[in-house]
Image (cartoon, rainbow, N blue to C red; front, side):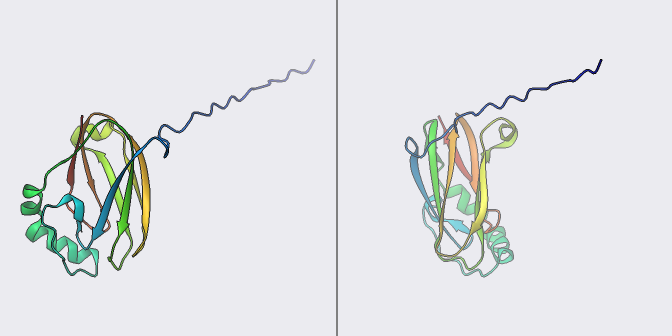
Length: 147
């Protein structure tokens, strides 16, 4: 007698947690070495490479972060629309939990953002402290507080 093992695969399709229809839109504009909306007095830096921004941030990053007000949001669904206004190289965006919260809080990231383009990053934010930045630009790690 032959025996056959029949296995059953079950796929569960879960709805995407955040939908564009219900999400609040947050605009972020990148220029060389910074996200404009994050800084109270943005400065036009001249940088044609990520290495140039590393040098700018070594000189000015601590002071700029000290004067920047944290972005405060309620928990919920958001679209972060990030624009590359005039940076002549590819950019991205990275939003993640701060410190050990990085392990449990939602995160969103991506690249491929060319000069003049915008991209949407959709995320459902939970209460906690986050950081957002562009590692490709690079920018300081700005603070986002979700209540």
